[in-house]
Length: 259
Length: 259
Image (cartoon, rainbow over all chains, first blue to last red; front, side, top):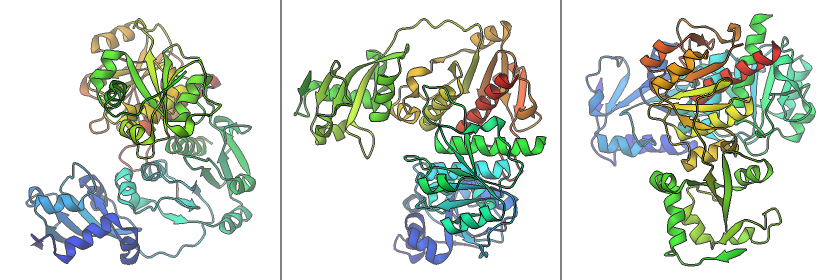
């Protein structure tokens, strides 16, 4: 099932490079790239309802590796072509093309969700997706101008967790609808919030985390039904967005399990 | 107090570039660079016993900025020279040279410490320093081959917190001494540990976090007096090192305050 390509001008090589670098190509094709064995291994070991591993692209060192499935279309590229596609300095010589499953985006009726407000850093989004899956959150909403979740840097930072966390955009109107249906909107704030470790999260919850540069936007702050604060020493003004979000998600889940 | 340099071959410009890029220059001079206003602002607003802002280097846009102190030696560089020194794509046009205060490294008798085991990623170390200060941990020990704490990428990720967190190397023998004096060594593990949220951290504690690639090393695992596990869903094998460390530090501190 393995075909080999040796020319840099082959259209498939060009398509791979476009998938790795162009949001437009990812959106039009409904596919994206996962680089490295760890992400691919996760897709092979756990069934995902969100996406499907469609093709593998390998360098010669992977050619006879027994961990690779036989029933997936596989393309062999020489190292110098592989490096042209990969965005990572020390490419692992293996990548997958992943197809997003088409889903209806309906608003949830219950559960715990993370809402990211204009989050720009791909490493932060990827890390938060990984933490959300680890904590057992049900999905992530992106509000405003957030980084694209299929950006290769995001996918890499998720360490395979991208396949288990629905991530979709949300509007202010949709947030208002969720609040009407009984969700709490909890925002993190440095000033005047209740202590995270003393807050009650027994209801259905949307946890909002602000952008790296500007924190929570004014319109979300006004919609919030709950303001929580991670207790911080005075020398530390704020935490990294991925850290703050992860601390809150794990605390919310730990509290739900205890009560 | 502002002097101006316009030549790229000026020895001070060369020295700045060396400070930004060479560990050897940082170690021999006992100084390092903090880039951007946020780190410098933190140093100006909070007294640090660990280091001192010695000089400022600014680009023309900062020349008449009233937030800058008058009593610190300041050098003005044209933008094109400033960009040569800065390691960041969007340089903010301001950096400080910071001198480390000479301190005696004696082993502590009590408190809460983070121990990093062969941690390699500068962003992770910087983020953990920021979280340690936020949580009120007393310092960080570096075990094995960790990234250098004065690396500009580390300093940047601390967002100014570097000035309030002692970070020093530790040997296996010193860890054993600390355990003899009554410290717990808590390691995080995926398998067979007690649930973090049910663990007792009332004693003096060293929390160990493993490397990004290999987790906790065997020798530390054997020394551990406590094994804790952050409860994770099966689709997520592990958390990012900075996330895991931060969740544990804040939980340990929250528990101490509650009890």
